[in-house]
Length: 387
Image (cartoon, rainbow, N blue to C red):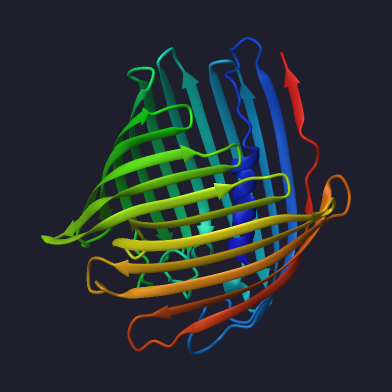
């Protein structure tokens, strides 16, 4: 499977199996531990999406992830370490070991809920920048640290106010003249949400942030205001809508635009699918703010008790908003077909094929990459204990 598919699968385990923990001093705490190991063999026709010298390589990926947690009636804590090892026959400069740790803490009060989360990562830019900034021809190490804190306050039975602040710092090792620039991004959010009934709600969100690149590069700032709507049509269908305006500026040059989100999801016993379309302003490894438009469709279908098929489509359009690359656009498209066969209670065998294309605005030619591979996953039984 592709690196991005491997990352998505591991991230899915993080979100799906992230088990809460309760504070050790809490009464009636429930402890739990889960783990997962995967091994994949994949072949790329153009791993780094090079236009002039395609890199045809075969690689092996090993992923390890664990979740430890404890939960009580009012508190929960999770810790999820992850490791992804990659080795390719194209040379040591492609090999990389990626590590990360994500921690979450939640505590509930009578009319409020507080949330803290933090993450540490030491990863390859071939992993992290591939689909975000397009700097796939750069193989450097990325060290990142991020913290977020938020509080949800129930003003009335139907109204909730959310306040959030966060900080993210990225450092690229030995990245001089590579196009990668260290940066720190500090952001905040204020949101209001009103419940119409048990299935519907609407509200407003106001967000802003400041990005400070390293060295002599200028700082950038962005603000956005959105209206939001959520509807749970049934136990299987859910809709989220957001629409608003945004502004990004750097050195007195402002860029006004719109932001939106359309998110529709269906879950069922045999078939799950998800469609999302969005536009937002985000920081990138190029040291500037980027407008990103993204469309995603995923479909998962259980064909038989031991067989499952999945289809994934993704379109990404990014546009640089500042600096000498202002106005530069990049189109990235990717399609993947995968199938999983459960060999035994804790073992699964999978196969996947994907095709990706990338095209920059200007004279640069379009590039593509065909990837196919097989994988083996072991998911041991979860362990739980109460005291």
